[in-house]
Image (cartoon, rainbow, N blue to C red):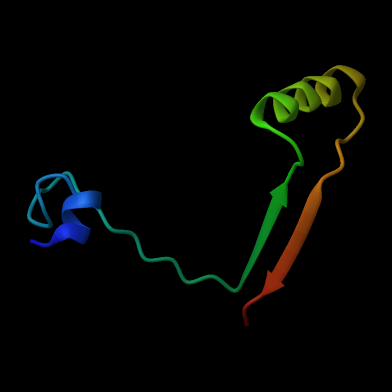
Length: 64
């Protein structure tokens, strides 16, 4: 075992509770809302109560 696996895999790679998942993606998308976590939470509540979508940063990446 090394420092990297110690940080991420409790009990090392032989621990049966540790699972690694391989994902092969053809694209990705992310959303980011400006402000602190509190501001993001307030904006989420506003969006839910008014029915209006909250605007933030949104980008898509084509990986194919």
